[in-house]
Length: 273
Image (tube, rainbow, N blue to C red; front, side, top):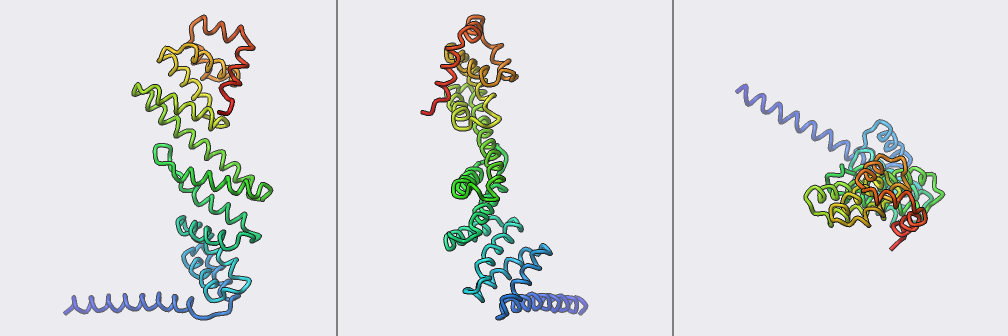
C-alpha cells in the first residue's frame, strides 16, 4: 500500500511539472503584443536562459512576421543559440537570415557570428580540421565583403589563428611521414606550409624539415637552397642554426659567399606557381 501511495505521488508530481512546462509553452505561444514578447526574450537572454530566449525570439517572428521587430528577432534567436553553444542551430538560423536579408544593416554581424560558430568548434590539430576550414572560409567572406566593418579587425586576427592551426595540421602530418621514412610525402606537406601558409609561425620549422628531408634523399643542392632561404628570412632562428649544422663546408660556403644566388633562390621558392 505504501509503495502504491509513493508511486501515485510521483506520478502526480510529474504531471504537475509537465503541466507547468506546458503552461509556460502555452504562454509563449499565445498571441501577445510584439513589444511584450521581445522584452521578455531580451530579459531571458540577459539572465542567460538561452533556450527560453531562443524560443521567445522565434515567437516574435512567428506571431509578428511583418513587424519591424521580426528581422531583429531572427538574428537574436541565432545569437541565443550561439551563446548556448548550440552551434549547428545558430549556423542554420544565420544561413537563413543571410539568405533572406542580404541588405540588412546587421548582415556583417550575422557573417561574423556565423564564423565564430565554426571557430569555437575548432579541435586540436590531431583531429579532423573540417571546422577550421569552414571557419577560414567564413572569416574570408566577412573580410572580403565588409573590409571596413567593426567586426573585421577581430575576424582578421582569428583568421590568422585559423591559418596557423591549419599549418600546424600540415606540419603534424609531415612529421609523421618523415618519422616513417615516407620522405616524399613529408616534403609535399612541408611545401604546402611554406607556400600556402607563409605568414604562419610554422614556416621556419617547415623549411628546416625540408632541409632534413632533402639531405635524407641525397638532394644536397635542394637542401642548400632551402637552408639559404631559411637563413635569409630568419637569420636568428634556432631552426636555421639546426639546418646550418646539417650542411657540409661546401654548402655553408656557398650560402655565405654568393649573395646573388641566395636572393634568386629565395625568390624562386616563394614565387607563386
